[in-house]
Structure formats: C-alpha cells, structure tokens
Image (cartoon, rainbow, N blue to C red; front, side, top):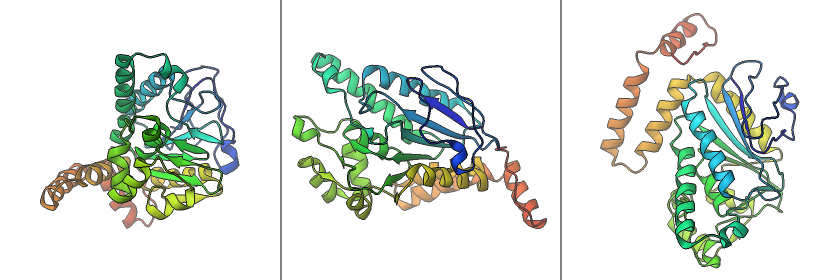
Length: 289
C-alpha cells in the first residue's frame, strides 16, 4: 500500500506517474490523506507543507506526531519517505515567531515534544529515507538525521546546518547525539559550535548526506521500491533493529542481538517463500508473514 500523508492539503509537486508509479487520487483532507499505489508496495510518503519554510510550529509538530503514530501501527507499511512540498526548503527548524510568544516553560515543553516526535522517526521499525530538495536547518536537519538514509539535491543553493548556538541555544531535538555518530565528534563540534552552514557536497564528504542526485525524490523512490519489492518486510524490520540497536553495544552484545533478530525470521513464511522461489528460479513474493 502506498500511503501519502499530507499536511495542509498538499498535492505533491511531482507526479508519481513520472517515475513509473500509477496515478493516485488524493483527498482534500487537510491533515492526512492515504491512497494505495498500483502494485501494493507499502511505501509511505510523508510530505511537510507548513508555509514558505516548513517551520516547526506547535500545529505542525502535533500533525507530524499523529502521522508517525499512525504509520507505526500500519503493518502494511514497508518504507517511509519524508519530503517537503517546497523544493527550496526541506525544513528551516523552529517557528521563531511562535517561539518568541512562549514562556520558558512552554519552550521546554515544545522542544521535548519535538524531540520525541523526531525520535519516532528513528525508532520506526521500517526503514526511512529523507529527501532533501532544499535547505535543512536546525530542527529540519535534525529530522533528516533521524532517517535511515538521506538523499539530497546537488545544487549549491541548499544550506545544511545546526545554527542553534548562534541563537543562544543548542540543538535540542537530537542533533548533538545523532550528528556525531554520522560525521564524527570533531566534525560535529565544528558544525555545532560555530553554527556552520555547509553545502551538499561537503555534507556528502563527511557522511552527513548519503547520496547526491539531480532528482532526489526520484532517487529515493527508486531505492524505496527496491527495498520494498526485493526484501522481505519482516527481514527489513529485523535488519534495522539489529543495525541500529547494535551500534552502541559491545561486539558480543551486538552479536547476541543479531542472533535474536535472526531467530525472528527463521520461522516466517517469507523465508520459506524465498527458498522455494530460488528452487523454482523465480523472484520471491513476500507477504510479510
């Protein structure tokens, strides 16, 4: 099932048919719209559409949190793609105009909710891909960091960074923790301490971005289709659990986690289907069972 989650009644810029997907009829629901694609691949597209810069307002964070909770409950979902309706901006971070009206207690509560919402992305059992077609700053970059894979447009106008220290605060939605794991402590400190803004090319060189592409949405869709079509959805979930759960563990503990995850896939119908397909010299048809 292809699920398209929409904020503010978004109609995606790029037709799905342009890259080989069937046309979908989108509802006018201003919060969430979901439709099936033609081949039932279970790819979910979540699109941000909150004004010119996709700033994280209270309303946007609540909507994002609700959508992620729904995706978490959807057993048919296999891969999540996160993108922006605005090709110039992925997400510019917090809505500073709204932030100026908050008390200190309200700020702390808001940041806590944003942190928990972005953490929902990293803890989803399914793989996720962030499509960065425009600038990603502050909380916007933190959202992208929570995805499993980041595909970015290659043009130099895109700005990437965590400028919070220059605003008298620090990254508060996971940036101080996720960025060092991707680019190393030294690079993370350099970017965060000075609020340094970098280009996609530099981001790729240090490991912040995984892939540059002239059409990152198309590249992400092709990758998502590959994962959803050729891999068992149960195996995908177990592989993500083993990799993400084992990163900070000692090797012995990580191998024990891998063994536990492997044990989950052995009795599945998908594994038996793969063996049968191999014997019959055809591609397996995985059902997530």
